[in-house]
Figure 1 (tube, rainbow, N blue to C red):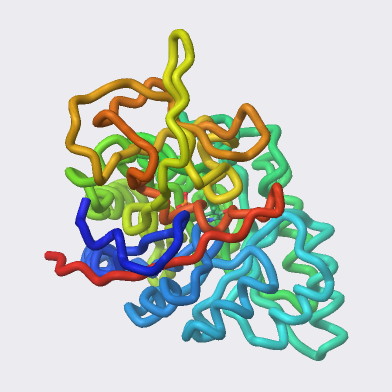
Figure 2: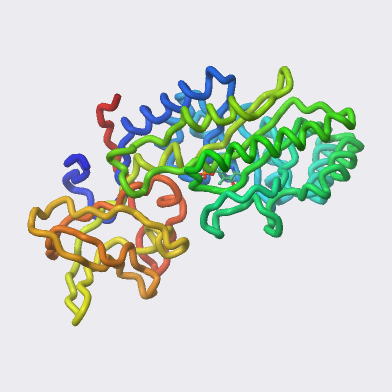
Length: 383
Ligand SMILES: *Cc1c(COP(=O)(O)O)cnc(C)c1O
C-alpha cells in the first residue's frame, strides 16, 4: 500500500482512490474486449463517484444504469446517451420517460408488465423504445446467496419457461423494438467454468429462438467478474483476458450480433481503500477490539454480506497481534473483521481497509447521523 494514502489536512474516514490503477485497469479491459469485438458498459451502481465516472467514460466504456438518477449522473460525466443501457426490476414511469427522452440505447426489461408500460409511454411520446429481455438462465453462480441472481426463484429476470410467450407478446407491441436478450447471473464470480456454463446455456436459448424465426442483434452477458479481496497487491486487476476468452471460446454468436458486458466490481474495486483512524483499543478478557472512526455506514459490505476486506495498519511497525476491528455505529454487525492480524495497534494509528472501490462509497449512508466520508484521489504510476 502506497504511503500517499495519508494526505495532509483531510479528516478520516475518507475514501482513497488510485486513479492511476483505475486507468490501467480500464486499459486492460479494453485490450481484452476489443479484439473480440465486445463492448463493455460500466455498471454505475458499483460506484457513481463523478471523478471515477469521468475516467471511465474517457476510456470509451458505456454505462449500465439502474435508476433515472444514475442515467443523469452518467450523462453529466461524459457518457453518450447512445452508450447507456438501463436495467432494474422496478423502473418508475418517470424514470422510463426520462430515459426515453434522453435517447438511451436500450432498456433491459425484467417482466412483461414493465414492457407494456414502456410501450405505452413510448407511444404517448411518439417514440419507439429499444428493449432487451433480461432472462433468468438458471445458472448457479456458486457465490453468496445475497448476490446470486441467475437461479430460479428470485425477483430478477424472465424465467425460461415464460420466455417464448414474452418474446411473442413483445413483438406484437408497436412502440418497442426487441433487440435481444440480457443475462446477469451474480457477482464476485472467479470460477470461469460458471461463465462457460452461461455461454452454453445462452447458445441453447438462442438456438431455440432462431428455430422459431426470431433473430436477435444484441446479447448482453451482464457483469459479475470477481476480484482478489485476499491479496489486492498481488492481484490489483482481475483476469479480464481469461474472462473474455471464455466467451470467445464457448459462446457461438450469429453474424452481426452485438455482444455487450456490464462490469462493475472488477473495474473499480481495487482502486479504492477506506482510510480511518484508530480511536480506541479496548482489551477484553479474550479479545482485543480496535475501534475505528469508520463504520458500517461508510462501508456496508462486511455487515451486509459478511464480506472479507483486507485490513492493514499503515503506521505501526510493532510485532503482530490479533484484533477484532470494529466501527463506532450502534450495531453488533458494525464489524470489519474478526481475529485480524495487525502490528500492535494504538490510538491514532491509521488503518486502510482495502478493495473498497466497488459497493463502498455507493452504499454509504448517514445512519447515526454520521457524515458521509469524502473522497481523495491520487494517480499512481502503473503499468
Ligand atoms: C450489479 C449489476 C452488474 C454489475 O455487477 P458486478 O458484479 O459489479 O460486475 C451488471 N449488470 C446488472 C444487471 C447488475 O445488476
